[in-house]
Amino acid sequence: MNILFLCTANSCRSILSEAVFNHRAPDGLRAFSAGSTPRGEVNPLTLAALRRHGISCDGLASKSIDSLVELHPDIVITFCDKAAGEACPVFFGASTTSHWGLADPSELDAPEAAVAREFDDTLSIIEARIAAFLALPLGQLDANAFKDELARIGTLMREHT
Image 1: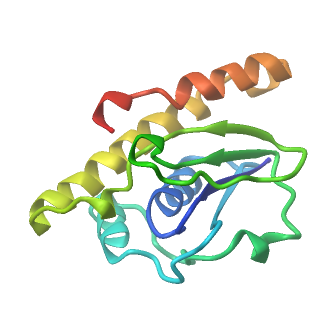
Image 2: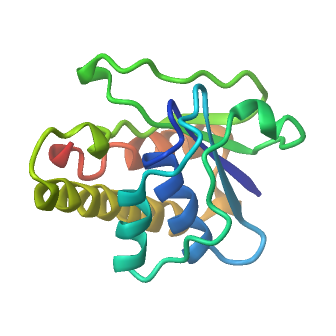
């Protein structure tokens, strides 16, 4: 099963999600990430947060959804912060989709230590959501129940966003 985490810049939230998912997922599940208008580089604070949490940064890169045309994901999870007016990326395909809205920690205008804490908080939310995803009885859920569960997971820890 292939999962695509999709956001606008592909430098933070989707990258964090790809790394955490691949770190935790069993064989047979694989995550990728991309952006609708990628920044072209992974935010250094993203990499620092992953390293603080003992998660590999190997192979992570900011890339366009167009670079993954051969990927036919089973699931597409989007990130954007609608409350901040951020445009959500759209995926056109037959995949199951869900939205796990999160504020972009790189947009926080604060001292460096506060921004680093925001990256850690965002990573913690992503870790909780991915743990909930991986705990799902994937083979036992019909398509509607699965989509409902993905939507429920997307609200976990939302009060921090």
